[in-house]
Length: 113
Length: 139
Ligand SMILES: Nc1ncnc2c1ncn2[C@@H]1O[C@H](COP(=O)(O)OP(=O)(O)OP(=O)(O)O)[C@@H](O)[C@H]1O
Ligand SMILES: [Mg+2]
Image (cartoon, rainbow over all chains, first blue to last red; front, side):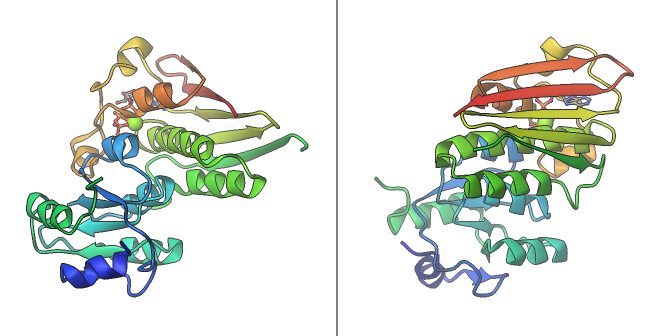
């Protein structure tokens, strides 16, 4: 499913505008420890996290993640937004906790083989 | 394809630029045309090594060597060094500061991640004398 469709279905907002919204999201991963996400996230995953600083962009680029979703109403730092736009990584926002959002993503078929 | 050697400086504690060297390497390896899974392995290790210099080391340098059938990373820094390398390689061991942990660093997974994703890993370090991490990949 394209990231833009997920944004619409789950009423997420995009902190980085239109950037990268046509990417395909295959699965998801929840994690707030960067090395854990480096080790265990899959290519094309949506990454649900509370981390909002600029280093999340490098993780998303290097692991070829589809998008980062900041949960619990977290907002990205200004530097994070600039970096994400520069690299074409969508940063999406949700007021829900990771557990609930992951459940909704699963319901719409993300990560269900 | 000719051999290629490139050097990238890394600044200690510069969290703003942290990761940029690894992103450049990822881009370069894509242009050269290595297989996607190979590039993922190298990028992951470059990132973990780069972050360790930023977080724990002193100012340093990453040297990338590219050959037809292999890639080597040599990451040196003039920081405090590692007292017990065996301990540093254990998953979960970390001396990261409270501040770094709040940012999601300090899981003690960086060096184990490098070990799992590379074909060779050599760490040369002495307390007070800096650190050199040599990582090899066979394409
Ligand atoms: N370049 C370095 N200079 C000094 N000490 C280092 C260096 N690299 C690693 N270390 C030491 O080795 C420990 C383990 O490193 P490792 O990368 O596995 O975990 P971490 O960096 O603490 O956490 P993570 O990588 O999961 O964010 C570090 O906490 C630090 O004590
Ligand atoms: Mg580390």
